[in-house]
Length: 379
Ligand code: MRU
Picture 1 (spheres, rainbow, N blue to C red):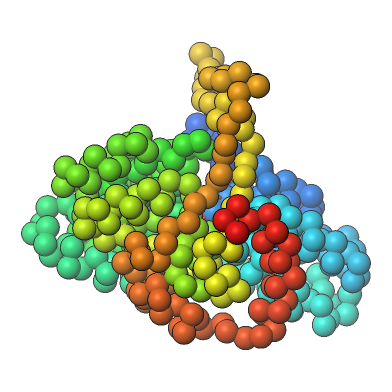
Picture 2 (cartoon, helix red, strand yellow):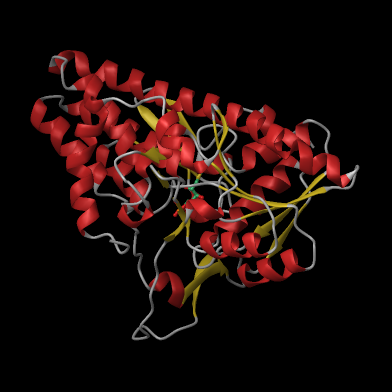
């Protein structure tokens, strides 16, 4: 089967003055593309998780600005579009990073010049993310080298959580990019994919890996520790939604438990993310805002009914109280390395190495960030 890693990413693509997205709420049961034509379409796609994954959220927000300016491109419209998109999801900092970048390019321009510039900048964000994914893949493969050698030709046993593949980015993914690179290098690899309750993004990862012909096995989240104890895991690799200056990394809830289990078993735990996910305005993970999502994600389980139609099965009464934090924070001390497009770095080195340390970015980001911090669960 041809590898997806050689194909252009179909998760999000531009079609003239529209954007086509693969609707991830309908995966893995069917591939449906949705056209985004307005700012509201883009905001809805992010909020409802038709698009998801930190880098893809950022790129979609950038295109949301371009869509907003198609009809009107004055200062009021630009500010309102920015505000609307910033409020869609709180944890993935790529959203703010992309919107800051759009503001920096567009604010100084005349209204007439803005629409074309907005499309060009959104295209650049998408293209650069794909290039970052490619580099993360190469650096991840290099980081795996000692593990591959130790396996002496037996499959490298990797574990991942959530979906940090091409569905979540504009290229090959973050955590999955090194896995695709390992497979493409002819190294046998097997991936343990955790289901990732309650939104089950692990099913998306399994769907992706199936398409690429990469051996993998889906597991219940609770099986992860036992597999490590049994010696069936060589390393864990996950993505991130926001990495603080000290190297603490927020990612899909359940990541932290895998970090703890990996440490208990002496296994390397890698976080793969582009620099656009590193937020130097967050000193530590305690300042990262953690999204709390609807309890219905717990109470209702999606799947196909007897007629093959997408449907929801109720497993809890409406009145059942539940707690549904969508992310958790893995402390830097549990992370062996953070694999970025510039290499595999020790978490403590990030602040010093950040390639885009400039006061303009930081101050533009601070105001949006301060309000998000007010609701942070870890503050
Ligand atoms: O809620 P989601 O599905 O948007 O969360 C996604 C994750 O947690 C990913 O691991 C992260 O964004 C990295 S994606 C390359």
